[in-house]
Image (cartoon, rainbow, N blue to C red; front, side):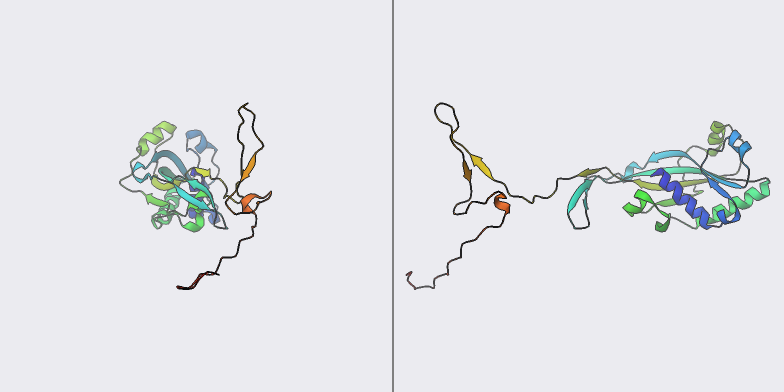
Length: 234
């Protein structure tokens, strides 16, 4: 699921014209060594915090059907997680970085959700909303200064982006539907403990079902006509 959120963000930022203008979108940790190796204008979306939204945890199971309408599996409900990104812009001059960051900000604040057309994998299969919160004041995540200190880099302008995405539940396959009948054989034991020749159990007044059991076609007796009131039986 995490890599699918990455891909959705990359596609969303790509639609803003970044990739067309030669700006690379990456998800690396912006460490000092990484910054020294960078060779062109770059937008970095670094994922640094993952937490479950326990308030949205569901119970029960969901039934999964195939194209023919047969039940094939049962799946536990999805669990929701909050993914927090530190988004930064990298260029040769601060003015260029601010211009890139402004373009990213305009793109992200215009979308409250990741559009369904940009979702892939399990996110697309679930069909649930993947929400975005950009530069929100209520982001419950480590401060940006703490993140920069942990990375060993220099503090610079950044955007906090919170993505709430579902993780697909676990699917358990179910047994296939019953398509064959059941034939039971019984045998009585003699006083000596040896089993007598067995006999096949079958419904009363039903012919031998044959090797296919009761799942095979059987001849049905004609239903007698109902007598009218007062009419004697011949």
